Length: 312
Ligand code: RIB
Ligand code: CA
Image 1 (cartoon, rainbow, N blue to C red):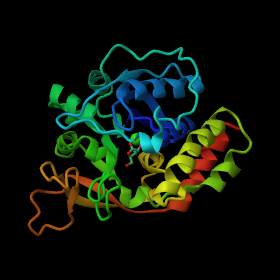
Image 2 (tube, rainbow, N blue to C red):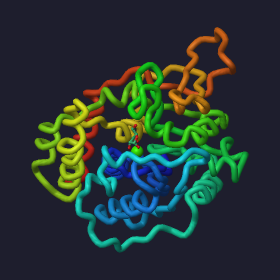
Image 3 (cartoon, rainbow, N blue to C red):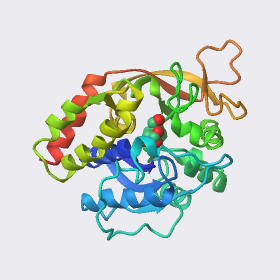
Image 4 (tube, rainbow, N blue to C red):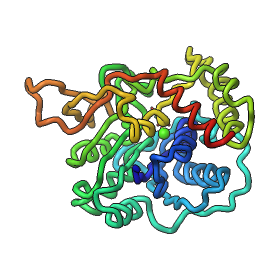
């Protein structure tokens, strides 16, 4: 069993990752922490609460996190995820509230409650994890693992030619997280952009309806109608759901040890993740495992099976 905290900026693909987490018996979702990313933290918090309310899982605490990145000016991705972050679907009146604690404090509290057991699954910018590290410098020694959706190692970025969105949105936080010394896996664009859903496939597997399948179809329709056609994209990239799946099925992905650092000063290269795979002029020993290949078909089968089993 994997006791996780999901740090997230919902986000259409974040929402699909929520559904997989709650449909997978291997995952114990201890808490959700929200951060500004795709949209601002007020909206990502509302979206996280809305998704839990949809699934009748108000028992899972949601802690609002950082509105602003550590240093840089905020960036958003409303062109991809819609103004409300969930494909501009109509959001129901909210009955749930976030807890009063800040996300960083909840992360610290849970790690102390379950020393050595918590896996931090970060599928948005890494601001909350960085703040938790600053508040509790010894935190990294008591965390089971950190699994991050982010970065672009051997492929171009998706927000600039060099940088992937989650890292670009808070590169200083990513630098702190990359060098904290905890066990770390990076699920980067190298594999997540290979794991795609065609609209027809989504239409087919959600046709039987129900709360979750209707939501999947509705939130992705914005992407297919208002984003993909204008950027020459025809399929939905399952970035965050793949990251979540690698927590309990790591062999979906081929991993490589690497020393990875983040560009903090480049005008054109800010947020670039730079990986050293051999010890030639490598600045230090490897600090993470990066994702170099993926069994995309097996993951899509897993995703569809888990949603079918949990909500049909
Ligand atoms: O680059 C993809 C990542 O940025 C995903 O986590 C998506 O939700 C956005 O946050
Ligand atoms: Ca995300």
